[in-house]
Length: 407
Image 1 (tube, rainbow, N blue to C red):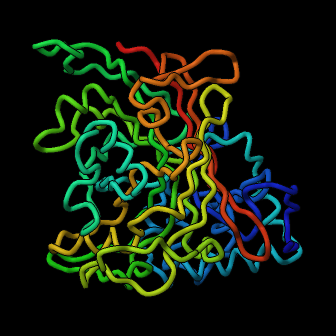
Image 2 (cartoon, one colour):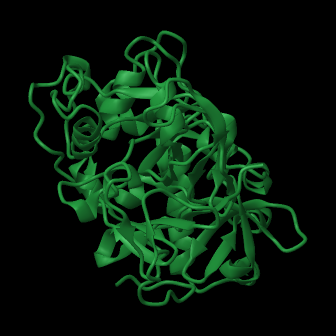
Image 3 (cartoon, one colour):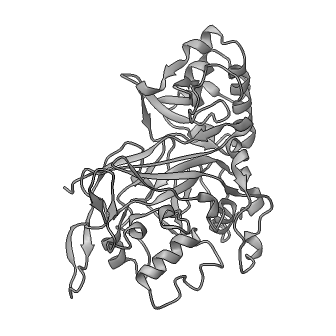
Protein backbone atom coordinates (compact mmCIF):
# COMPACT_ATOMS: atom_id res chain seq x y z
CA UNK A 1 0.00 0.00 0.00
CA UNK A 2 1.39 3.43 -0.85
CA UNK A 3 2.18 5.78 2.00
CA UNK A 4 1.31 9.42 1.91
CA UNK A 5 -0.38 12.28 3.65
CA UNK A 6 -3.03 12.55 4.91
CA UNK A 7 -3.52 9.02 6.27
CA UNK A 8 -6.20 7.09 4.38
CA UNK A 9 -8.33 4.54 6.26
CA UNK A 10 -8.23 0.96 5.01
CA UNK A 11 -10.98 0.35 2.48
CA UNK A 12 -11.40 4.00 1.55
CA UNK A 13 -12.37 4.48 -2.10
CA UNK A 14 -10.13 7.56 -2.18
CA UNK A 15 -6.50 6.52 -1.69
CA UNK A 16 -3.71 8.67 -3.14
CA UNK A 17 -3.71 6.41 -6.21
CA UNK A 18 -7.16 7.75 -7.13
CA UNK A 19 -7.24 11.56 -6.80
CA UNK A 20 -10.58 12.19 -8.53
CA UNK A 21 -11.82 15.74 -9.06
CA UNK A 22 -15.09 17.33 -8.11
CA UNK A 23 -16.71 20.60 -7.14
CA UNK A 24 -18.03 21.08 -3.62
CA UNK A 25 -18.83 23.77 -1.09
CA UNK A 26 -18.20 23.89 2.67
CA UNK A 27 -21.20 25.12 4.63
CA UNK A 28 -21.91 28.76 3.83
CA UNK A 29 -19.05 29.08 1.34
CA UNK A 30 -18.79 29.11 -2.46
CA UNK A 31 -18.13 25.93 -4.37
CA UNK A 32 -14.60 25.24 -5.58
CA UNK A 33 -12.57 22.37 -7.06
CA UNK A 34 -11.59 19.70 -4.54
CA UNK A 35 -9.92 16.29 -4.58
CA UNK A 36 -11.14 13.67 -2.05
CA UNK A 37 -8.42 11.80 -0.15
CA UNK A 38 -9.58 9.33 2.49
CA UNK A 39 -12.05 11.10 4.76
CA UNK A 40 -10.93 14.56 3.66
CA UNK A 41 -10.81 16.67 0.52
CA UNK A 42 -7.99 18.88 -0.66
CA UNK A 43 -9.18 22.38 -1.54
CA UNK A 44 -7.31 23.01 -4.80
CA UNK A 45 -8.34 26.65 -4.85
CA UNK A 46 -6.48 27.20 -1.58
CA UNK A 47 -3.51 25.12 -2.74
CA UNK A 48 -3.30 27.14 -5.96
CA UNK A 49 -3.43 30.47 -4.09
CA UNK A 50 -0.42 29.36 -2.05
CA UNK A 51 1.60 28.92 -5.24
CA UNK A 52 2.04 25.18 -4.81
CA UNK A 53 0.42 24.43 -8.20
CA UNK A 54 2.37 27.02 -10.20
CA UNK A 55 3.45 25.74 -13.60
CA UNK A 56 0.78 23.07 -13.87
CA UNK A 57 -1.81 25.16 -15.74
CA UNK A 58 -1.65 28.63 -17.32
CA UNK A 59 -3.74 30.03 -14.45
CA UNK A 60 -4.30 27.42 -11.71
CA UNK A 61 -5.83 29.94 -9.32
CA UNK A 62 -8.64 30.77 -11.75
CA UNK A 63 -9.12 27.14 -12.80
CA UNK A 64 -9.53 25.77 -9.28
CA UNK A 65 -11.47 28.67 -7.72
CA UNK A 66 -14.20 28.11 -10.32
CA UNK A 67 -17.43 26.32 -9.55
CA UNK A 68 -16.88 23.82 -12.39
CA UNK A 69 -14.06 21.60 -13.67
CA UNK A 70 -14.40 23.20 -17.12
CA UNK A 71 -11.04 24.98 -16.95
CA UNK A 72 -9.21 21.80 -15.98
CA UNK A 73 -11.06 19.73 -18.61
CA UNK A 74 -10.02 22.12 -21.35
CA UNK A 75 -6.34 22.02 -20.33
CA UNK A 76 -5.75 18.77 -22.20
CA UNK A 77 -3.56 15.75 -21.42
CA UNK A 78 -0.42 17.77 -20.65
CA UNK A 79 -2.23 19.91 -18.10
CA UNK A 80 -4.04 16.93 -16.57
CA UNK A 81 -0.76 15.05 -16.15
CA UNK A 82 1.03 18.09 -14.68
CA UNK A 83 -1.64 18.65 -12.02
CA UNK A 84 -1.85 14.96 -11.08
CA UNK A 85 1.94 14.62 -10.86
CA UNK A 86 2.22 17.71 -8.69
CA UNK A 87 -0.54 16.53 -6.34
CA UNK A 88 1.22 13.18 -5.89
CA UNK A 89 4.44 15.02 -5.08
CA UNK A 90 2.73 17.22 -2.51
CA UNK A 91 0.98 14.28 -0.86
CA UNK A 92 4.19 12.29 -0.62
CA UNK A 93 5.97 15.12 1.23
CA UNK A 94 5.73 16.32 4.79
CA UNK A 95 2.75 18.65 4.62
CA UNK A 96 3.39 22.37 4.63
CA UNK A 97 1.26 24.81 6.58
CA UNK A 98 -0.45 25.83 3.34
CA UNK A 99 -1.27 22.22 2.45
CA UNK A 100 -2.54 21.35 5.93
CA UNK A 101 -4.80 24.39 5.90
CA UNK A 102 -6.31 23.32 2.58
CA UNK A 103 -7.60 20.01 3.94
CA UNK A 104 -11.39 19.92 4.51
CA UNK A 105 -13.57 17.21 6.11
CA UNK A 106 -15.21 15.36 3.25
CA UNK A 107 -18.42 14.79 5.21
CA UNK A 108 -18.94 18.54 5.56
CA UNK A 109 -18.92 19.29 1.83
CA UNK A 110 -21.93 19.71 -0.44
CA UNK A 111 -21.08 18.34 -3.90
CA UNK A 112 -22.20 20.24 -6.99
CA UNK A 113 -22.49 19.19 -10.62
CA UNK A 114 -18.77 18.91 -11.39
CA UNK A 115 -18.72 20.27 -14.95
CA UNK A 116 -20.94 21.98 -17.50
CA UNK A 117 -22.55 19.21 -19.52
CA UNK A 118 -22.26 20.25 -23.16
CA UNK A 119 -23.97 17.30 -24.86
CA UNK A 120 -25.16 13.97 -23.51
CA UNK A 121 -25.21 10.71 -25.48
CA UNK A 122 -26.32 7.36 -24.11
CA UNK A 123 -25.18 4.18 -25.84
CA UNK A 124 -26.64 0.67 -25.86
CA UNK A 125 -23.40 -1.26 -25.45
CA UNK A 126 -24.09 -4.27 -23.19
CA UNK A 127 -24.76 -7.45 -25.15
CA UNK A 128 -26.52 -9.11 -22.22
CA UNK A 129 -28.76 -6.09 -21.61
CA UNK A 130 -29.68 -5.71 -25.27
CA UNK A 131 -30.41 -9.45 -25.48
CA UNK A 132 -32.64 -9.33 -22.40
CA UNK A 133 -34.57 -6.34 -23.72
CA UNK A 134 -35.10 -8.10 -27.04
CA UNK A 135 -36.35 -11.24 -25.32
CA UNK A 136 -38.79 -9.22 -23.20
CA UNK A 137 -40.30 -7.20 -26.05
CA UNK A 138 -39.67 -9.46 -29.07
CA UNK A 139 -39.86 -13.00 -27.66
CA UNK A 140 -40.49 -14.60 -31.06
CA UNK A 141 -37.76 -12.73 -32.96
CA UNK A 142 -34.00 -12.28 -32.88
CA UNK A 143 -33.43 -10.32 -29.66
CA UNK A 144 -30.77 -8.08 -31.24
CA UNK A 145 -31.51 -5.55 -33.99
CA UNK A 146 -29.70 -6.36 -37.23
CA UNK A 147 -27.27 -3.44 -36.76
CA UNK A 148 -26.37 -4.07 -33.10
CA UNK A 149 -23.14 -6.05 -33.61
CA UNK A 150 -21.95 -3.76 -36.40
CA UNK A 151 -21.88 -0.38 -34.63
CA UNK A 152 -22.42 1.20 -31.20
CA UNK A 153 -26.02 2.38 -31.03
CA UNK A 154 -27.05 5.40 -28.98
CA UNK A 155 -29.45 8.30 -28.53
CA UNK A 156 -29.00 11.97 -27.68
CA UNK A 157 -30.31 12.95 -24.25
CA UNK A 158 -30.98 16.28 -22.55
CA UNK A 159 -27.78 17.77 -21.14
CA UNK A 160 -29.79 20.23 -19.05
CA UNK A 161 -31.37 17.49 -16.94
CA UNK A 162 -28.10 15.89 -15.79
CA UNK A 163 -27.84 16.29 -12.01
CA UNK A 164 -25.28 15.44 -9.34
CA UNK A 165 -25.68 12.57 -6.90
CA UNK A 166 -28.07 13.30 -4.04
CA UNK A 167 -30.47 15.37 -6.14
CA UNK A 168 -34.05 14.05 -5.72
CA UNK A 169 -35.77 12.84 -8.88
CA UNK A 170 -39.40 13.77 -9.48
CA UNK A 171 -41.60 11.02 -10.94
CA UNK A 172 -42.34 12.17 -14.49
CA UNK A 173 -45.74 12.61 -16.09
CA UNK A 174 -46.20 11.54 -19.68
CA UNK A 175 -48.32 9.79 -22.25
CA UNK A 176 -48.47 6.00 -22.36
CA UNK A 177 -50.90 3.28 -23.34
CA UNK A 178 -52.05 0.82 -20.64
CA UNK A 179 -51.99 -2.88 -21.58
CA UNK A 180 -55.03 -3.81 -23.64
CA UNK A 181 -56.21 -0.21 -24.06
CA UNK A 182 -56.94 1.29 -27.46
CA UNK A 183 -55.94 4.83 -26.55
CA UNK A 184 -53.15 6.33 -24.43
CA UNK A 185 -53.52 8.12 -21.10
CA UNK A 186 -51.57 11.01 -19.61
CA UNK A 187 -50.36 10.63 -16.05
CA UNK A 188 -47.45 9.73 -13.76
CA UNK A 189 -45.34 6.87 -15.00
CA UNK A 190 -46.10 3.52 -13.38
CA UNK A 191 -42.83 1.96 -14.56
CA UNK A 192 -40.05 4.17 -13.20
CA UNK A 193 -36.73 2.40 -13.63
CA UNK A 194 -33.03 2.69 -12.86
CA UNK A 195 -30.19 2.00 -15.29
CA UNK A 196 -26.70 1.20 -13.97
CA UNK A 197 -24.22 2.90 -16.29
CA UNK A 198 -20.64 4.14 -16.61
CA UNK A 199 -19.88 7.38 -18.47
CA UNK A 200 -16.84 9.34 -19.62
CA UNK A 201 -16.26 13.08 -19.86
CA UNK A 202 -14.63 14.85 -22.81
CA UNK A 203 -12.02 17.51 -22.15
CA UNK A 204 -10.42 18.38 -25.48
CA UNK A 205 -12.87 19.51 -28.19
CA UNK A 206 -12.66 18.95 -31.94
CA UNK A 207 -13.38 21.06 -34.99
CA UNK A 208 -16.48 20.41 -37.10
CA UNK A 209 -15.73 17.63 -39.56
CA UNK A 210 -12.85 16.24 -37.49
CA UNK A 211 -13.00 12.49 -36.82
CA UNK A 212 -11.45 11.02 -33.67
CA UNK A 213 -9.68 7.68 -34.18
CA UNK A 214 -10.31 5.04 -31.53
CA UNK A 215 -6.59 5.07 -30.70
CA UNK A 216 -6.79 8.82 -30.00
CA UNK A 217 -9.37 8.37 -27.24
CA UNK A 218 -6.94 9.39 -24.51
CA UNK A 219 -6.13 12.67 -26.26
CA UNK A 220 -9.70 13.88 -25.70
CA UNK A 221 -11.19 12.13 -22.67
CA UNK A 222 -10.49 13.31 -19.13
CA UNK A 223 -12.17 10.80 -16.85
CA UNK A 224 -15.05 8.58 -15.80
CA UNK A 225 -18.19 8.86 -13.65
CA UNK A 226 -21.05 6.57 -12.67
CA UNK A 227 -24.44 7.34 -14.17
CA UNK A 228 -28.10 6.49 -13.62
CA UNK A 229 -30.20 6.92 -16.75
CA UNK A 230 -33.58 7.07 -14.98
CA UNK A 231 -36.25 5.69 -17.34
CA UNK A 232 -40.04 5.71 -17.50
CA UNK A 233 -40.59 2.43 -19.30
CA UNK A 234 -44.29 2.88 -20.10
CA UNK A 235 -43.70 6.34 -21.59
CA UNK A 236 -40.63 5.06 -23.41
CA UNK A 237 -42.36 2.03 -24.94
CA UNK A 238 -45.19 4.20 -26.32
CA UNK A 239 -42.94 6.88 -27.84
CA UNK A 240 -39.73 5.19 -28.96
CA UNK A 241 -40.83 4.05 -32.42
CA UNK A 242 -39.72 5.35 -34.88
CA UNK A 243 -37.26 7.91 -33.46
CA UNK A 244 -36.11 6.41 -30.15
CA UNK A 245 -36.25 7.52 -26.50
CA UNK A 246 -37.48 11.03 -25.71
CA UNK A 247 -39.61 12.03 -22.70
CA UNK A 248 -39.27 8.61 -21.12
CA UNK A 249 -35.64 9.42 -20.35
CA UNK A 250 -35.13 13.18 -20.55
CA UNK A 251 -36.51 14.11 -17.12
CA UNK A 252 -33.35 13.28 -15.09
CA UNK A 253 -29.92 11.67 -15.37
CA UNK A 254 -27.77 11.36 -12.25
CA UNK A 255 -23.96 11.24 -12.17
CA UNK A 256 -21.55 10.57 -9.32
CA UNK A 257 -19.84 13.68 -7.87
CA UNK A 258 -16.20 12.73 -8.52
CA UNK A 259 -14.61 12.42 -11.95
CA UNK A 260 -11.96 9.68 -11.81
CA UNK A 261 -9.11 10.47 -14.24
CA UNK A 262 -8.26 7.89 -16.88
CA UNK A 263 -4.74 7.71 -15.43
CA UNK A 264 -6.17 6.41 -12.16
CA UNK A 265 -7.87 3.55 -14.01
CA UNK A 266 -4.84 2.15 -15.82
CA UNK A 267 -4.65 -0.81 -13.42
CA UNK A 268 -8.32 -1.59 -14.12
CA UNK A 269 -7.90 -2.02 -17.88
CA UNK A 270 -8.59 -5.56 -19.13
CA UNK A 271 -9.17 -7.16 -22.55
CA UNK A 272 -12.65 -6.48 -23.96
CA UNK A 273 -15.03 -9.25 -25.05
CA UNK A 274 -14.41 -10.83 -28.45
CA UNK A 275 -16.37 -9.10 -31.21
CA UNK A 276 -17.95 -10.93 -34.12
CA UNK A 277 -18.17 -9.76 -36.87
CA UNK A 278 -14.90 -7.84 -37.02
CA UNK A 279 -15.66 -4.16 -36.39
CA UNK A 280 -15.41 -1.62 -39.19
CA UNK A 281 -12.01 0.03 -39.64
CA UNK A 282 -12.87 3.14 -37.65
CA UNK A 283 -13.91 0.97 -34.67
CA UNK A 284 -10.68 -1.00 -34.38
CA UNK A 285 -8.54 -0.09 -31.39
CA UNK A 286 -5.23 -1.24 -30.01
CA UNK A 287 -4.76 -1.99 -26.32
CA UNK A 288 -7.12 -3.23 -23.62
CA UNK A 289 -9.98 -0.77 -23.19
CA UNK A 290 -12.45 -2.70 -21.07
CA UNK A 291 -12.44 -1.76 -17.38
CA UNK A 292 -12.72 -4.15 -14.45
CA UNK A 293 -15.29 -2.12 -12.51
CA UNK A 294 -17.29 -3.88 -9.78
CA UNK A 295 -20.69 -2.18 -9.97
CA UNK A 296 -23.41 -2.42 -7.35
CA UNK A 297 -27.08 -1.42 -7.44
CA UNK A 298 -28.78 -0.79 -4.11
CA UNK A 299 -32.49 -0.05 -3.55
CA UNK A 300 -33.62 0.99 -0.06
CA UNK A 301 -30.49 -0.49 1.49
CA UNK A 302 -30.65 -3.85 -0.32
CA UNK A 303 -28.04 -4.69 -2.95
CA UNK A 304 -30.11 -6.16 -5.79
CA UNK A 305 -27.51 -6.51 -8.55
CA UNK A 306 -23.78 -6.46 -9.25
CA UNK A 307 -23.32 -5.80 -12.97
CA UNK A 308 -19.84 -6.50 -14.46
CA UNK A 309 -18.71 -3.57 -16.60
CA UNK A 310 -15.79 -5.53 -18.11
CA UNK A 311 -18.30 -7.57 -20.14
CA UNK A 312 -19.57 -4.49 -22.04
CA UNK A 313 -19.37 -5.29 -25.76
CA UNK A 314 -18.57 -1.85 -27.22
CA UNK A 315 -15.66 -0.06 -25.54
CA UNK A 316 -15.33 3.64 -24.75
CA UNK A 317 -12.83 4.34 -27.59
CA UNK A 318 -15.14 2.60 -30.06
CA UNK A 319 -18.09 4.65 -28.86
CA UNK A 320 -16.21 7.94 -29.24
CA UNK A 321 -14.79 6.99 -32.64
CA UNK A 322 -18.25 6.11 -33.90
CA UNK A 323 -19.87 9.24 -32.44
CA UNK A 324 -17.40 11.42 -34.39
CA UNK A 325 -17.14 9.25 -37.51
CA UNK A 326 -19.50 11.55 -39.42
CA UNK A 327 -17.58 14.67 -38.39
CA UNK A 328 -19.78 15.57 -35.41
CA UNK A 329 -17.70 17.82 -33.17
CA UNK A 330 -16.78 17.25 -29.56
CA UNK A 331 -17.12 19.98 -26.94
CA UNK A 332 -15.55 20.29 -23.53
CA UNK A 333 -17.99 18.69 -21.09
CA UNK A 334 -19.55 16.21 -23.50
CA UNK A 335 -20.85 13.21 -21.56
CA UNK A 336 -21.00 9.74 -23.14
CA UNK A 337 -22.69 6.91 -21.24
CA UNK A 338 -22.44 3.15 -21.70
CA UNK A 339 -26.11 2.25 -21.61
CA UNK A 340 -27.34 -0.22 -19.01
CA UNK A 341 -24.59 -2.55 -17.83
CA UNK A 342 -25.76 -6.13 -17.39
CA UNK A 343 -24.08 -9.52 -17.13
CA UNK A 344 -25.27 -12.95 -18.11
CA UNK A 345 -26.78 -13.95 -14.75
CA UNK A 346 -29.88 -12.46 -13.15
CA UNK A 347 -27.96 -11.03 -10.18
CA UNK A 348 -25.88 -9.07 -12.72
CA UNK A 349 -28.74 -7.28 -14.48
CA UNK A 350 -28.58 -3.49 -14.22
CA UNK A 351 -32.24 -2.45 -14.50
CA UNK A 352 -35.60 -3.30 -12.97
CA UNK A 353 -36.91 -3.92 -16.47
CA UNK A 354 -34.69 -7.00 -16.46
CA UNK A 355 -34.70 -7.85 -12.76
CA UNK A 356 -38.53 -7.97 -12.71
CA UNK A 357 -38.80 -9.07 -16.34
CA UNK A 358 -40.99 -6.05 -17.08
CA UNK A 359 -43.08 -6.53 -13.95
CA UNK A 360 -43.66 -10.27 -14.23
CA UNK A 361 -41.31 -11.28 -11.37
CA UNK A 362 -41.35 -9.00 -8.30
CA UNK A 363 -37.90 -8.35 -6.84
CA UNK A 364 -37.66 -8.98 -3.06
CA UNK A 365 -35.97 -6.36 -0.85
CA UNK A 366 -34.38 -6.79 2.54
CA UNK A 367 -37.23 -5.06 4.40
CA UNK A 368 -39.74 -7.71 3.29
CA UNK A 369 -41.24 -5.61 0.49
CA UNK A 370 -40.79 -6.22 -3.22
CA UNK A 371 -40.56 -4.12 -6.35
CA UNK A 372 -41.35 -4.47 -10.00
CA UNK A 373 -40.58 -0.78 -10.63
CA UNK A 374 -39.64 2.09 -8.32
CA UNK A 375 -42.13 3.56 -5.85
CA UNK A 376 -42.24 7.08 -4.43
CA UNK A 377 -39.74 7.47 -1.61
CA UNK A 378 -37.39 4.75 -2.88
CA UNK A 379 -33.68 5.41 -2.44
CA UNK A 380 -31.44 4.25 -5.29
CA UNK A 381 -27.64 4.06 -5.04
CA UNK A 382 -25.11 2.95 -7.66
CA UNK A 383 -21.54 2.30 -6.50
CA UNK A 384 -18.38 0.96 -8.08
CA UNK A 385 -14.80 0.15 -7.23
CA UNK A 386 -11.89 -0.73 -9.49
CA UNK A 387 -8.30 -1.92 -9.12
CA UNK A 388 -5.92 0.98 -8.57
CA UNK A 389 -2.16 1.24 -8.66
CA UNK A 390 -0.02 -0.46 -6.00
CA UNK A 391 -2.69 -2.95 -4.99
CA UNK A 392 -5.28 -0.37 -3.96
CA UNK A 393 -8.96 -0.24 -4.86
CA UNK A 394 -10.44 3.06 -5.94
CA UNK A 395 -14.01 4.36 -6.07
CA UNK A 396 -16.24 6.99 -7.62
CA UNK A 397 -18.50 8.00 -4.77
CA UNK A 398 -22.20 7.20 -4.65
CA UNK A 399 -24.47 7.90 -7.60
CA UNK A 400 -27.66 8.32 -5.59
CA UNK A 401 -31.16 9.71 -5.82
CA UNK A 402 -34.52 9.48 -4.08
CA UNK A 403 -37.85 9.31 -5.93
CA UNK A 404 -40.29 12.16 -5.25
CA UNK A 405 -44.00 11.97 -6.14
CA UNK A 406 -45.22 13.48 -9.39
CA UNK A 407 -46.35 17.09 -9.15
